[in-house]
Image (cartoon, rainbow, N blue to C red; front, side, top):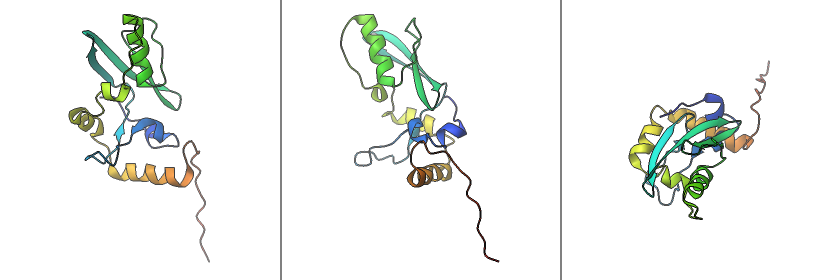
Length: 145
């Protein structure tokens, strides 16, 4: 189901690479990673779509394999909606994460496989302390003699 890249998923831009649960409605409190090179197949209006996640600098890019132009979109919704609109000449809108199955327990379990809670906690702590996009800097160890 794709790969986890340490620098992206646990680094300064980690918030771009995770789907965080709605804590009010979600029973599963773990975040779901958006894995590089994962491919998700689904059907809309009797047409088969495949969306692939690609590394697009510091955030995920989404390519619809049905789109001849192979444009890299910044959101899954944009990739699905733009391709759908080209095919069917409509203004229908879809929620990318829902269509891709990020609310489907089986898909979420597969994407969360091999994710360490310790790493996730460290990434959340880093984000709270430094903020999104902040470069990691090693702080010197201060000791008293």
